[in-house]
Image (cartoon, rainbow, N blue to C red; front, side):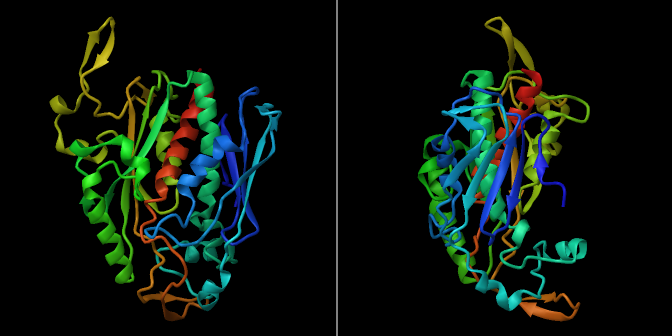
Length: 356
């Protein structure tokens, strides 16, 4: 399993399993003399950590990060930055009854076919527990971006749909995103989402979600055609997140509902500078940033670990049934918001180091 790293200049490699002793990552390519300590990373991990509300998994992890290398007297040294988080609340016994069964919708079967060995404790390496280290790396990426673009960049993620319940964009209020359990920008829909989550749990099921990411303050010129386009790298980064099944940039799949006249982003000169009259392309043209706000979305499928009994097979290829116990997110898309932010930040940081 060699593909544990992402990026070209700003890179990070993660390691560890859901129920192992610890998880960690190595962040490389960070320039020297950038101020960095654990307090720069911890707030982002706190946004993602489990057990913060009744609408996510009840696993309790503090997710306290430690910097092991690459920082001296509060400044990056230009060498690899090693980060570690110790696991504290594993309950591997929850999986002992299903250790020989493949959970439908999970990576159990494909990991078994590929490696002929599988850590059944929470999915091992395929668990979303790994995403905590993506968030840690993303916090470092934000420091790199701010150094290269003078603190102009703002990266924001929000949940815009759970199941078939969508926000009203007219109610978008960025100030409340961090003030509710769903990273939701539409206060009027939160109560509906609470009912959806509660009903899904009672039904022994789960729900999918769509997350929108926005990055403002990005200068024009980031991205390298043809095969290192900024949007293709963003899409790859987001598709590596557990349970993600689709990504769109700007209008994305909605572009099919437009025609050429309505979908193009017309340009004028305003105050002596180029100015776009719309942003249907999500701030990226020809794989290169246009200077507009970068807008992208990704869809997360319903959590596959559910208590409802489902048909499956075991490692001896015998038919059986399975009901997954334990502490699982009824909608994994909720905690995917800070993960998406981190992957977008890491991609932008990588391209900043290539171009600026």
